[in-house]
Amino acid sequence: METLAELRAQVLQLQIENARYREERCASEAKDTSDRASINYQPKFPEGISPCQRYLSSPTYRMVGKGKVHNTSGELLHHNPLPVGFMKVSVDLVLDTDARLPLPDVVSETTLMRDAVGSFVGWPSDLIFPDAETPTRPTHKVGKGISRRIESVASQKEVPGRELKSAAKDIPTTSGTKSQIMMRLEKMVEESDIMHGAIRTINFDEGVFGAAHFEIIGKEDFQQLFEHTELGITVIHTYIWYMYVTLMRGTELCNRFNFIAASRINATLITNNPTSVKNDLVDIFMAAGDNTTPSLYFLPFNSGNGGHWVLVAMDLSRLIVYYLDSLSGDWSKYPNMKKTIDAAIIKFRLKKKYRNRKDITWIRVQCPQQNNSVDCGFFVLRFMRDIIALNRIDIPKMYFEEYKTYSRANLDEIKDELCQFIVDQRII
Image (cartoon, rainbow, N blue to C red):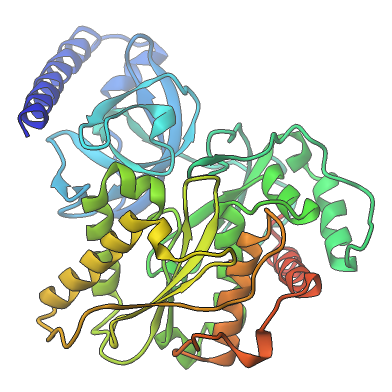
């Protein structure tokens, strides 16, 4: 606690010195008519969430990344008020990996831009500018919510705790046993600018995760489908979007099944800041309603140790947590995960003033098991798909009679559905 207090004092002093430096710099350059005089410009962002560019003024004035600025009243950063002159922004794209954060996170001890990818940080408001995303091929008609641009995203395409395979490897062109829709998508990717480093930004329906959400998809994500390799967060989330659109949207299933983004609750974040993760989980529960009727919260959980995926399904009304792991073992492999989820459920029920009738019950479901080292992500997606399709809130301990095992065809069906969805949404 003493060390934390000292760190907070040091950060406060750095903020004061940084603000004084910017005031002096702005005053000295007030009459400067060069391009760098734009440091004095205070952009006005509309209320809500907007794309933005992030700049730093030292040692040189330059753009260091992109993301989204959250301009809402009472906005908090990791459950703490923002310092005066700062705004909350998401770190989605890093252009200068060695740049230092203007407001270090004393809790997670994050000081560099490259370590903040996928999280929120505080940024000086005078160094945030609107980002107008320009398509790389403006004459090509695109689907709603899909933007195109060419940038390096190597730092973004990773599962917590795992580095994905190099994007330099060519996407295979041999068909093998691939379906027609996969070969069609593969050809579309090969003929697009994605092969040369372009990316696509996909804006999800707000109903998917209960709030605005977007993903950046690139060459390496398509490789995971075409080569049947370990799945990353982007593919996991995009298939969840598919399930929401094709199975749930506009039906009563939206009241029975909820999704929690794997980028918000995972082993890496729990290790760095368990209290923040717990509070985020409570906020998700609070936003969804009273939770007094049976429903499930699906959390695709990444272990952060080799990138293994498991599925955690929470029924808050009955205080039951289902644990589905396509490898042997149970939640005891991830004690911090269980501790954080239990604490979040208890805190949520206390805030709602519900009566805790009993302890939280964890059930290890005897679900289908994988026979290799890469299928865990596909199994997690299949688990969620089958539970929703069967419209079952209560998951049998011995799993469903219809799906005692998963064949390769069952997993290929997941890939074909996602390929068809990507084509239909005109993402390429």
